[in-house]
Length: 174
Image (cartoon, one colour):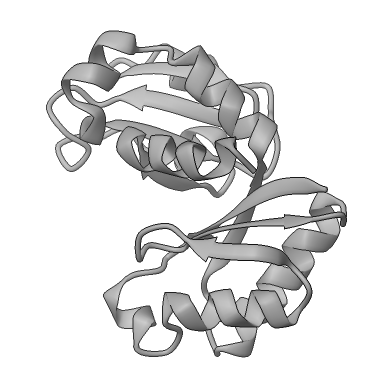
């Protein structure tokens, strides 16, 4: 059985009125996903399944849309993908010094990452790890002018390093 994390895009306080994290967890369990657990209240659902990634994504997307959240998008990562990101830790000093300002951008698939992203003309440092891009924002995510989606032409969802480590810690022993 594979351990997955579903990373929901555009989930926050407003969407919680429509879909509480616990409600998604309960629906995932009813749908046959094994031991679903939420991490934080920002759309991170960890669970196990014998189904392939595409089927998992389709089913979790259906559950989210069942709550009326048609604008949210579901990104799926496996335990091995999260492990690869954590072990790579491309900016070890930053991940220890200012982990809330190190972002991990999750994409649906790895791509030929554009040079304008990997070597931006800005203060950020960027590294690709599989289907994710890790960014050291230095002074903070909100101050950044780096537009990852525009540079890649693809949608993504982002979590800070602390959140990725928390997800990994909950996946590691499964």
